[in-house]
Length: 122
Image 1 (cartoon, rainbow, N blue to C red):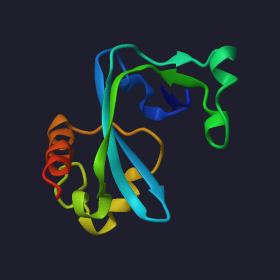
Image 2: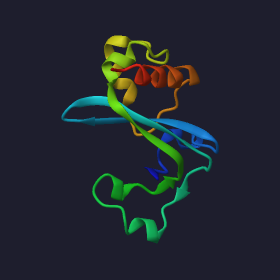
Image 3: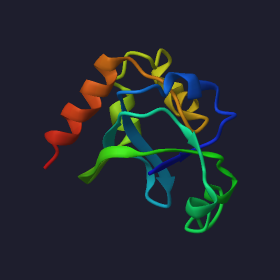
Image 4: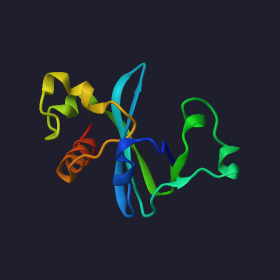
């Protein structure tokens, strides 16, 4: 399950039969950590699901996407390294600004680039 907000500008891009790459930030830096696919569009969080959701910002999210499959990569891919190879990042020196917000639609070629980079890591 992937939690999202209905106020996310890109929620309309999360249509049926999509793929996603997951990006996380933390003490170890900004990383791409995995990917997944889904076949349904976002749906409102039910009371039953809400019971299992703990912590912020997750408790504030209003919709969920049921993932058909999800894969955590063996080694997270540092976003700064990957950004240099992504076509939608025009100003490579300001790459971090392109990842503001919780959902961003990227070109299929960039999704494939990230998947390929993750698969060749040692």
